[in-house]
Image (cartoon, rainbow, N blue to C red):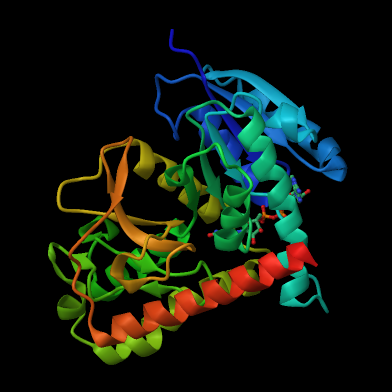
Length: 328
Ligand code: NAX
């Protein structure tokens, strides 16, 4: 049988980990014929709850799951991994400044970047979920000089999925009718789910909805504040939908994109669409399942350009604050 794909998951004992590991082990990420091995990475206090999660993985008797490693040692954790899903990070606590948060997480991602560089498999690809995910990804990448820049991703797929469902519900169509929905910018409330470029049943979403006031004043804030809305209702942040978006992102990056279609993910910018170079920002991409490229030729109107520029200005500032905090 095929050799397993080895997947590292940091923060494996957390909420998202609890929803994510079972989907990887069941074959939903790499397919029903592909064995997987899991390298589960936690900080010390997370190791005991992690044991419980691993007992549950055992009790699922997943036929595809060949091995589970549990560790707080980064060299052991990233040894030979083909994918590194960086979910764990330190959440913002009351009274904590944004710069403090960027500094604390920055240090974590320096260490993880180095450990991935020195230990991962040659073909490693990295997806950062832990917030601030764009800047965390950039910091890890900067500390992994041997790993090509096109292997680094941060996640906006949850925002993309949220936006698709809102448009589908408004138009009264199944969500599968909504395609080409690019989220641009930072994974933060400033991100821009581009309803002008999106399609519903192959036609312009903005035209099908036919209500720009709703799109600008209801849809955009709804998607931007969806995370807060879920915390308000559930008393905890989105976890199952976040884990689902991790699965969707990896599937989107490892299988050919449907003709004429695209998805969005945060990657290192090279100045496409006037975006500043050298930030990890969400862009429209397509792939043959191995090599990916930024989709070219999307026409952006002034409204879209302004929204994208504002979110990327936030990322440029985050980068500056984070790298200053790391030096200080
Ligand atoms: P939890 O607090 O439930 O779990 C985080 C886990 O990470 C904990 O078990 C903790 O022990 C562990 N951890 C902390 N520092 C670590 C380190 N240095 N190495 C390894 N493990 C470490 O959070 P959860 O709800 O699972 O969310 C995880 C992260 O995802 C958060 O940063 C959250 O903000 C982020 N999210 C990102 C999303 C995105 O779309 N990019 C959406 C969902 C989510 O909000």
